[in-house]
Image (cartoon, rainbow, N blue to C red):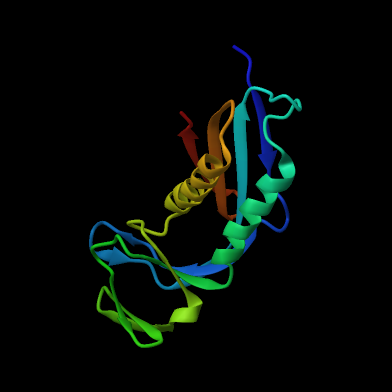
Length: 162
């Protein structure tokens, strides 16, 4: 079986963001940040224009997603170790005995259990899949998102489209 694939990995599909990851149910990394790089691949048959998918709208959508994360504090709202409460224009965050207060404008709340590169790739994939379903997936069979948190450390999530 033959398959076509297109990949978008642009110098502007990057985002600088702060986060911390919890592990072993009780431990938490110190607050820190990364200059993430995101890429997307889409597989499928060629359409009537001989495209798997047009690069232009794909790179625009990936850029919009990464721009929404850029220069923000990423907080996982599905993490039982992290408590996030809203107080006016701020979010109060408690985790592992630490207390943080972040302005709402500087935070992106993500409905994921942890802000690992793997789950960021999953979340970005979900945004792209929802967008594809709104615009018609045509003959697409799979979508893959890569998130590199530092050079040489990349997580990949693959979503089979149906």
